[in-house]
Image (tube, rainbow, N blue to C red; front, side, top):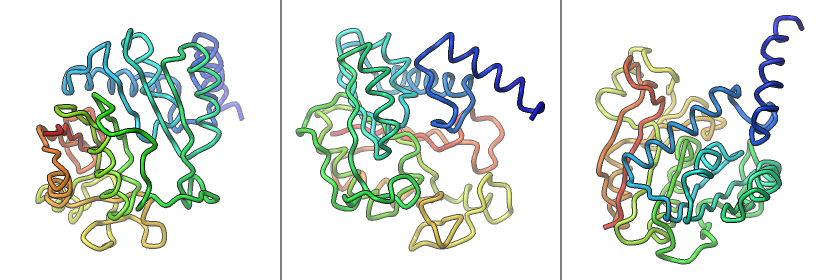
Length: 257
């Protein structure tokens, strides 16, 4: 018990300083990391996607609002829409973020997930995002494709393209299989043991492939191209044994042509 006491005290102090930090049981990171991940994510959107204060942004799989929090100060005239499949996360965001800024909207989409929403009634392979076409200047998918089956990823890509404005950009993170990462996996240098085949992909758990999935880079690029999305830049992450990157996942900057 005493081992965790300093951490618990820090968490309590951090949450008093910022009531927008969700309870510890609703996030996967400590308060400091939670805040820094969101801050770095928004900096990337501004730098790589040209995000402007008046833009409309869609956050696919928004979780407990890690990206929304730093965006509250930046989107002075724009708007933010986030959706997720976990009811408690969305309820928390609505109560604590939307109540402070009505231009920030959070929506529950009842998609089935064995781990996160086992009672869900919708299928990710056929889901249609509840937004009109050509609606958003920027779409964010942070660690979403790392937990989806290939058919689900393809459908989300189609929907992302549909709701993006012409010329809009998307920030996507994934685990990409290429020659370098495949070699790292083979030699045990990767942070995750992608030992099992799942079609053309690799997973760490045969019984629960959504736990973590790695997708062939050329396949993902092809799926994006099929719906008019062009990959502008890839920044490879540290997961495959690379020592220098700050990002764990592989980051893709994608533009709608």
